[in-house]
Every structure is written in structure tokens, then in C-alpha cells.
Image 1 (cartoon, rainbow, N blue to C red):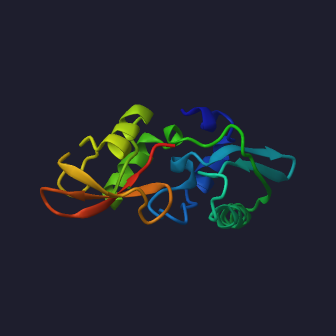
Image 2: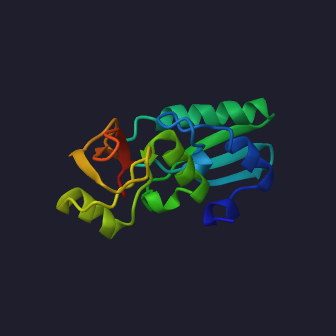
Length: 165
């Protein structure tokens, strides 16, 4: 059980696991580690969420999707945005990391390896197509600001790498 799940009423977990991240639909907001707390207080579910970065445009959609999922399950809800502590890629669950890679996005490395890859050109990011680490950085920014664009030198496939935050 993750630290986040300790602050989430057990009956809410399956409901929140059905809410997808709008930018990476193969991941739930639970797998992304966006949900900080979700507790039932009287007849209201209070949910605290943290954006993957402070200007994340998806947070309104995520809040609305949470409210809809809870309403469909018979709950009224209140969503609160929590900015501190800031979200980190360490909060992505192992299941979420696996789903990222199966979707074609390389999961984030640790902070030191991430710097080595993005600033020094080390070949540590595995291709999501063939698993080779013979990859190269194409652009510091991929399909979103939190991703970098890579290409595999072996199979030639392009792919995104989710940067460590």
C-alpha cells in the first residue's frame, strides 16, 4: 500500500482507479499519484489532488472527472487542489510505470540518471519498442512539457520519455 492509499477510504479506491489521466489515458489518476487524499465525511467525499506541475491544464478536467465518477457511484464530492509538496515522478506507481512503457512512453529515471540523459547525452533511456538503450535525445520537449522526444538508433522508432520531476 502506498502512502497515498493510506489517506484514501478503501471503498473509494476502485472508483478513483477508473478516472484516467486525460493526457495519458492508459493511466489512472491513482497510478499517476495525483490523488493525495479521498475521505468520506458524512455524505460528502473530500478529495485532494496535486497537479503533475503547477500549470497543468488537465487539473480542471481531472477534478470534473473525479466528481462525475463519484456522483455515478452515489457520492457528492468536493475537490481541493494541493500544491505542496509538489508532485514528483516518484509517485507514479509500478503499475503506472509499466502502463507508460506499454503505451510507448519511457518511464522516468531517477533524478541523477535523468540529468545524465538530458544534459550529457548518456544512453540510459530504453526504447519502448525494442528495449535497446542505444537511443538519442531528439528534443528536450515531446508531446507535452513533461516529456522529451527520443529516437532509437537500432529500430529507428521515435518515442517520448517522461522526464523526472
